[in-house]
Image (cartoon, rainbow, N blue to C red; front, side, top):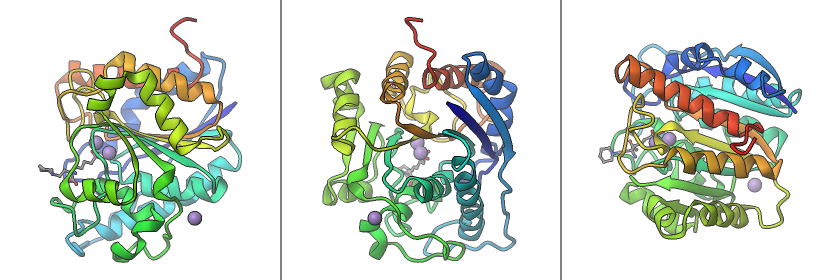
Length: 304
Ligand SMILES: N[C@](CCCC[B-](O)(O)O)(CCN1CCCCC1)C(=O)O
Ligand SMILES: [Mn+2]
Ligand SMILES: [Mn+2]
Ligand SMILES: [Mn+2]
């Protein structure tokens, strides 16, 4: 299959400088040629233009709404364009607000897509339920039909309409979910496998149940949004909101290999890499392990 890589050097969905350098360090880590060496046809389509609006005052407590909203529109347009020419797109972020644009853009091409959200966090706060006002903790709230009446139309978001249903989402890796998010997950019956379920059932069972829940017929395109903080912080320390007790390398490889096996993966987000956090060794480990995970989505199987 043909793979298109785009960079999203963006950080305004959260307060810590550094996620704007995520695309750069993943490219320097060799992501493109490591995928080409697997026999994939990979093309790097450069970076999305990011918008930094002056005096971007908070709205409904959400921070940098205009910068995030206007950048998300450019992301959606770029992803839509990519997916009309490539089989698969990998978006290198950037903070997780990037998923507003990547999912909106993907849904224009694949309206029947399902979302696997691999993350320590649920990222489904509304501006009102958020305790931080950081939009990287809200992306799914802007995308889900069932939440439309709960989410105010922020400046910069005029272009966006919800494009997925709550039942189209499955979480894997949760271990830091806010009270408001818990209520939303329960109210709308969103499929959610926390680290506790992974310990109880094992990763094989969790992946099977997650896929069966969102795509019982096994025929829907998969958008996989990977927050590197889903992995244990001993593996990916260079990220802004680390939470102990995360996915092992083997569990993460297993998720990638099983999703690859469906043959229905259409888009991957790689979110929340922050190379300014941690020392050189931690940065290198974070980047190298993420690249090794990405390779597992594209046929690099442990069994050869
Ligand atoms: N839920 C949080 C974290 C969001 C992380 C975004 B991700 O997954 O893209 O990295 C946490 C809010 N809050 C922080 C202080 C302690 C209680 C939880 C929020 O800010 O909304
Ligand atoms: Mn997270
Ligand atoms: Mn719909
Ligand atoms: Mn996230």
